[in-house]
View 1 (cartoon, rainbow, N blue to C red):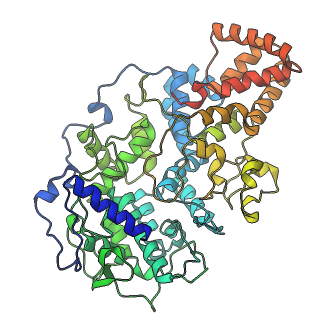
View 2: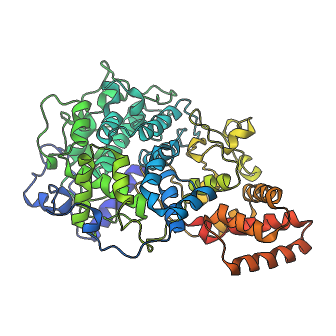
View 3: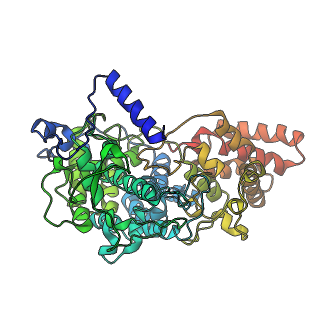
Length: 569
């Protein structure tokens, strides 16, 4: 039995056990269930509910005591740029905390902003620079889509335009944006290219439904959705918008952009039980019926404009929920990839709808929406959910505090050195390393994104594998994470470089060394007790190591391993 058939059988058994009726028909169009008024009563499917008299986040949530300036500047800088503040930036803000708004504006205007927030979108886009599967072949120009996202974020491209170009940029004079559609895994050497095409189109459709509608549309590939009013025919009508973009050739990788084919395109049909060998009734492109009528002769441009519309409430809720999650570590609706019946209702529904409406009110400016959030008293309070640095942020922060971060932007992904025990398991071309060592210290967004093998630091700290769209990263706590930060060649190199710089600046003045190291790594002044403990450590460790600088490197390594370094708050 093929994997797809096994998965379908298991789903049937599981849902039967839970009393859920799976509707899989030999004629999914003829047997399509109608959309009822009750279907539209679910909170996510309703129009936005706007609460009168509410003009900001603090009208919905009672503010708590404010964070101290050092905590606030570190939180804000990581949040907007993915990097730690410098000691000078911290000192300046502590002296003048009233400058908060100007600091916000400066960070939003920084090129580092787009580099950081682009990774959020690339997670959703399941972006990588290889095919995945057995051979995991490189995709030579995939990085151009990544650079497009970074640039669009930095230019503050209106978010409706940003989204529309992901779907139909080739029809809007910006084909690079459509790299979103073809960022999926692929198997170019599959014997049956019609099966390959089927899998690719299903992936594109599933991802569009997940990213822009916050629904598990892909569950309707083989049968009507078990929980949400999305029929199998709805799935294939949505898929039909992309039918003329996918005509793969054997052993030819996906191109980086969409191309429209006018000849050789199979008729748009529903595939009975999702089987590519069983094309069923013909269909026309259309939005899922739950969301209203589709204009006649609609193409991808029409789909794109409908998706990113101020009248598309579920799109606005989906995006507002995800942006809130990125700032606070926790979304308002707990399952950001599923706002349907199997998801959870938002903890603050009125706030979510207000925030959703705020995006078009701010002329679709993400930067303005970020500013609305971070300027709120709720964001600036002392007690927020703890947010751990992602693997990319952790690596970038370590390079930054040691003065080694290379801020060169754009270009092909940089292939980093890998531990020998890992590189020895790879095919020859898969363990190539960029020959320019200075490139190895580029920001993580510019490192080569391989599907079958992530950088060990990224993998341990829960970077998604880019097989499917990732709406929310896991945040595991494992022993190998601590072992990596304590023992890896990378961590020791960072600590040694930091100790060398500190030693050059302060000699053997232990108090000055500890103060500077704490300011660089933790963005605050050390306490008296910390200075005393650090002095005792350096004294004891010097006797156990080859020299004072080696002991200082061990002290720096301890700071890099502290919870305070790894967590934002």
